[in-house]
Length: 416
Ligand SMILES: Nc1ncnc2c1ncn2[C@@H]1O[C@H](COP(=O)(O)OP(=O)(O)OP(=O)(O)O)[C@@H](O)[C@H]1O
Ligand SMILES: [Mg+2]
Image 1 (cartoon, rainbow, N blue to C red):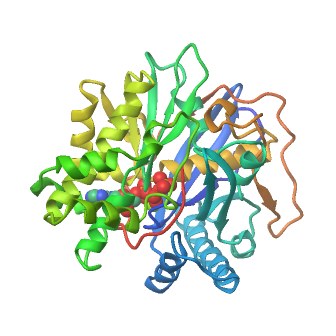
Image 2 (tube, rainbow, N blue to C red):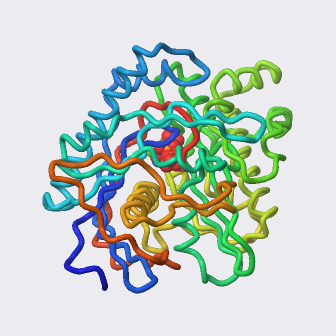
Image 3 (cartoon, helix red, strand yellow):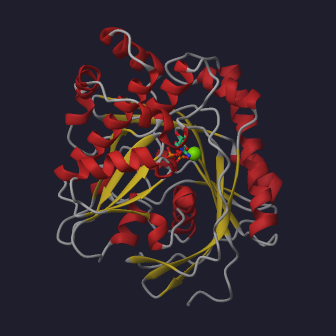
């Protein structure tokens, strides 16, 4: 491997649309010629405190909020991310972490008429730099938006480097709050987009229908007992977002509880199990339609939705023969995949390399992403690399069996 002595581990921090937990994945990342090599070191995950989760949920779209609350959330989320980063450094990196890359918590993704005009992630990096002493790369989406892109799905460059060269037309599917797909054809530019909801409506329905007693449909048990309702499914599938051409991204700004309640009110009374079965089918159908539309021949799934066997079964059924495996099968733990992907993006940034694929995000050009907050020592960056890597190789994952905590309270914006 080139690039001098063993590089210090990198920590990627992520909390997605579901706001279920802050995930921290640690990895060793280095260059081997034109290959970026990632060795997973593991993942730790912590839920927001109930108090912070409630404050966040109350501020997210479609609610309105105040600047005072935004300042408070930015601080409290920054501290919460810092706590998880410190834990990851101690438990996974032996205190040797050299860089932290923080996605932050999306609270608003300003999409209008198919264009993204702004995107806001909270969780001020100063807290993370202060607590870990490491430099922090943060605010990764904004630069792609400024370059005319959707600012998402940002993991598309990682998926492209990782899946390129596999036979057929591989596609990476992340089942977070929102589902996003990256398709890597051998002979054309890759494309990526959000297909629609993965878990966000399922979680909203469970919370709503159980009066807040449950936060998600654990193992799809409710959905398994119900039957998809054709009228409700038909109404939900009428959503114009699904028919829009890529690149496109969405989030809680569109798919929120009032959206679901309006559809339920139009349908009339339904058993909760049938609502869950219908929403599970909605995710499966919209994902499979997207997979078919792009001609993918293989789907590699990741994200919390892969822990829901009923959802995975429904997707497999709708895919009608297109094989689906999980990213674990290819060496990248599915619960931690997004956090690892952000670690990769930060490493690209500090080496002066672009973190986007314009055909995926719709940007005018590829851009070096993020803002860098110095750590305790003066900021020194690696010598910029002249050439971007052409592939990502995952090496021997040392037992990343660490199960994430049960999904918890939920909150906003497009992720992935
Ligand atoms: N055992 C399970 N059974 C059913 N659903 C589960 C289970 N475990 C996780 N989930 C679902 O996965 C969701 C969390 O997934 P994940 O963390 O990938 O999403 P996210 O935080 O929104 O990330 P992103 O938007 O970046 O992809 C939970 O909110 C829940 O709906
Ligand atoms: Mg999550």
